[in-house]
Image (cartoon, rainbow, N blue to C red; front, side):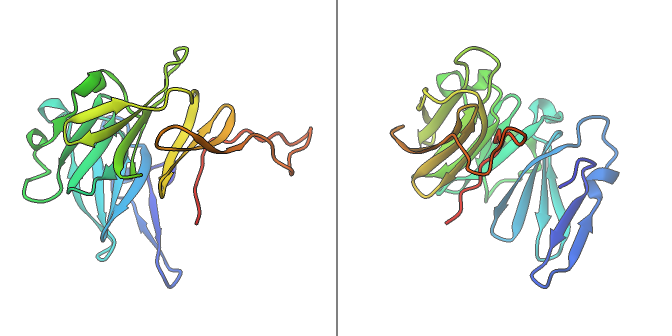
Length: 219
């Protein structure tokens, strides 16, 4: 995804398919693509107005979900899928979720808001499934304001790791949680015990300073 909201899809035979639907969409507001999450044959684009679903078999936009209150635009920053059939969206106004099957996701009223432990009061930046749970994280300008949460049951959430602050990125791979923060790259298990910490880089020099802003786990 590009800054102008164009999307390029690179196929298995190295062809580039361009989708300009979001760029051309008549929206008076934020058309930024904040993240991309894939599930089965679909890519879910987290956008400044809602969710755009791309069918990777047909190479076309198949749906657009506007999930804000009363059907209003709502910035969506990240999307995850649970192992019990739900789609979760990290938004400017908390976490919204809905069953992937059996309901009309075009209808905003079929999306519920997570209200446990005051999560509806936060803007949530990252959400992911791993280590047996849905996890969510938020960035904050407040001192010690960054938060990590996890879902233990459909409506049961707990605040988890509190030690990691100034989060720039958050991913899960296997049973480990990967953070990119002001300190560097921190990898912890779901209890919060540190497994890996990277804060120096052999290729850095006085002229080339390294300040990571994202993390991508690789097997």
